[in-house]
Structures are given as structure tokens and as C-alpha cells.
Image (tube, rainbow, N blue to C red; front, side, top):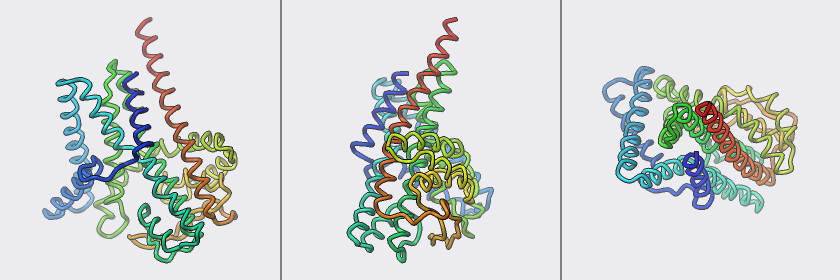
Amino acid sequence: MLELTGILFIAFLLDLIIGDPRYRYHPIRIIGDGISLFEKILRNIGFNGRGGGIFLVVVLVIVFLAVYLLISFGLYGFYYPLGLCFDLFICYSCLALKDLIHHVRPVAHALETANIPEARERLSEVVGRDVSFLDDREISRAAIETLAENFVDGFLSPIFWYVTGGILTCLSGYYQVNVAVGFMLVFKIANTLDSMVGYRTEKYLQFGWAGARLDDCMNFFPARLSLFVLFFGTLFAFMHPIKGLRGALRDRLKHDSPNSAHAESFFAGALNIRLGGPAQYSDGHRSRPWLGIGSPDPVPIDIKRAIRIIKYSAGVTIALSFAVIFLFVQVIQERIWY
């Protein structure tokens, strides 16, 4: 239990202090390079339909998980602390909380100084939509939406799967951190697949189907868990958790995605703003429904308020993770004792 919680806590601290540095051999970048390579190979041999996409997902999960476990077991066998350091490195690489806040905060600052071109440029670093014609209200909406969505994708979901893997190791009687980190890594593979091939364009509609569905499945429980985490994060931030929950219960299923509107609708309610609406993405125009309909458009201060909620919710996530791991370990130990 100490190793499971210790690695997660240190990875969380490293993310808060250092963030997610960009370098050539970042594990997530390697996954992205692998996706590009295998996609190119499959398309060159004509395996570019739904079957090819399913094959892509299966191969990527098997290859990257096998490579990770091979390195991890090898390091543990050679020198146990070295294996722990490697798992800590992978766990830390799968979290992206500070990086998200670091990219969104300058958007609010640029808007406060009425520097719309700067705000658009900063926003373009974290969103996939066309920002060239966005006004200050639309920029604020996009910034808060990406905070909400990426809190789940970049922080809550990886930790959820880490804890899930940790619990399964406890149930099996083995306290091996690499199982927990392996679950976290599989989620990041799914999430990276969705961001690279999960588009509804002619090129990816069939080929990217499996990657997008895997990401939907792995985000299903974390997206719903986010309402609980955000409720207490908003409470500790002295804002409006009840309004956030009401907004989420009303609007959480309005998007085509089964998951993306959960956190967004909570923020819309908690901040008393409207989110969603039509947007131009790289793969075309999307007419999304409004979340928090009837509320005013967000302003720059709402971005800062959303960041405050994210920070407190991150603390709630870590505390909840430790509590769940501790509870399961205690229950299992009591069953073994008796």
C-alpha cells in the first residue's frame, strides 16, 4: 500500500512542481509516434477500414504494454528501487494538471488586457478548434471547456485507472505497482488514439472508430465520478457546488459524446455561465447544444475561477484515491487474517 500511494503522491507533486516537460522521448510522444507509424503501415497495405482500426488498437495496447512490463520487471529484478523509479517516471508522465493550467492561465491574462490576438494564440495551444475568429466571450468559453474536459482526460481518468489497477493487485494478493501503472498507461494509449484518429471525418470515421470507442469506455466511469470530485472541489473553493450539480444533472447528456458534457455542464452550473454552442474544429463545423442555457457568457474572471475549482478538485482526487486504496487494503488484510 505504501508503494501504491507513495508513487502516486510523488508523481502528483512532481506534476505540480515541474509540470509536463516537452522532450523528444516523452512516453506519450512515443505512443503518438507509434500510432502514426502503425497507421501508415496499415493504410499502405489497404487495411484502413474499421477492421484496420481495431487491429491498430489491439497491436498498440499489446506492444506498448509488453514493452513497459518487460522494462519494469527487468528493472525490478536488477535493483528494486530502480523499478520503483521507472514506475514513478511513467506515472508522472501520465499526469498533465499543471501543464493544463499553465496553458490556460495566460489566456485569461491576455483577455484582461484586451489582447485578443494573444488570447487566440495561447488558446490555440490547447484546443483543436479554429480560434482565428473567436471573440472574447468565445475564447473564455473554449478555455473553460478545455479545463473541464482535460481535467478528466489528463488527470482524473489516469488516476482512476491507476487506483483500479492497484485495487486489483490487492485483491490478487500481490502489491505490485507496475500493474497499477500498466492500467494507467493503457488509458493514455486509448486517449492518445482518440486525439489522433478519433475524428468524424471521411478519413477516420471507420478507421478511428475503435480508438474513439475505447476512449469512451475508459472515460465512462471517471466522467461520472468527476461530478463527485468537482462537487467537493467547488465546495472547498467556496463557490456553488449545488448549482454545479444541478447543471450537470440537467445537461450532462446533451453532447454526442457520452462523457464530455459531464464536467463541462458542472462548470457551467457552478460558475453560472453558458458553455458549448457552435464551434469550428479542424475536422469541420459542429453545432453543439448549449450547456447552462439562459446563463450569461463567461468572462476572463470565470477562467480563473474555473482554475481554482480544478486545483481544489485535484486535491480531492488524490485524497479520495488514498482513501480507496487504504480501505481495500484493510478489508483484504482483515479477510486474510480471519
